[in-house]
Image 1 (cartoon, rainbow, N blue to C red):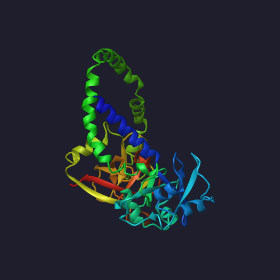
Image 2: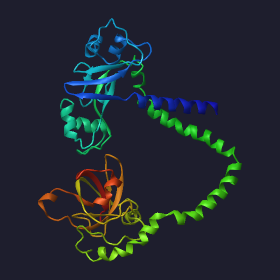
Image 3: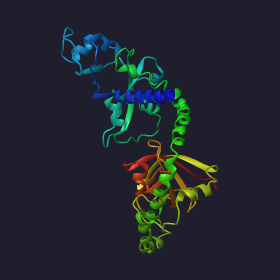
Image 4: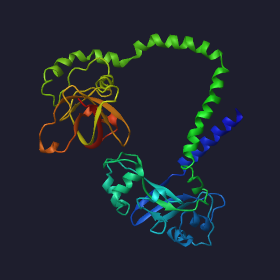
Length: 347
């Protein structure tokens, strides 16, 4: 029991250090740099070993002399150059390298990031971050290269953490059995909590705003029902239950599906935001088919009902789907054109 608790504390501490030691890049090519906070016992030479760079270069970047000592907590700029900053495609497999991250700003594109970081190949960025397409999300952290270093500094001491992370994850099930006896040693809890659960359950119908809002929808249903045959900009009546259940029925629980990958856009509709019931235009899926739409950048998915085919307009060229705009928040997309993955009934 004590060993399991100590293992859990150790794992938590490792994860916390890793999060704090994320190397965030500043500036733009050719003046790229990292910010390092001086820790106890560090000096110019230890920083040079930690970042694969001459101590003189670090001192020059900070307009300091090497005979000046480094005070604890001081912010030091670490330059990134061809000597210590690697952007080759297979760099992630190299020993003694640590990933350097860029935080995506609002309305920032993948192409702009490519230019800012010395025209790093877009395919390299996609491979390092395991995504396809060109869409990036605000506040996401993207790997834009790797910095050299032997890990002697207190900062890089946590760099090897990603390697032992998988074994640590495998030991977590061993912690769970230890946690279960704790629940068993509290026999009084089931007796004291049951009355609370029973009391809260009758109150749920009074606190569920969603069913009440749906009951008000019959007033808008006639507006949606009339243009069902034309589809664009309109939404038919919302059926009982979710579209996910219908999707599972149509696809034999996901076993009989066709998949597509490509660009999509939005059309305006009166679909209810957050209802989980959205609508789509698609060229091959029959009307009434439920399509699962996934954003590969966030991993989020929604289920949309096909209303009609995509209109044959120049602006719709090469699109694989058009979605009702109510699905934007659910998919985590704020761009007018986006990359997505589809799956639906193959019949």
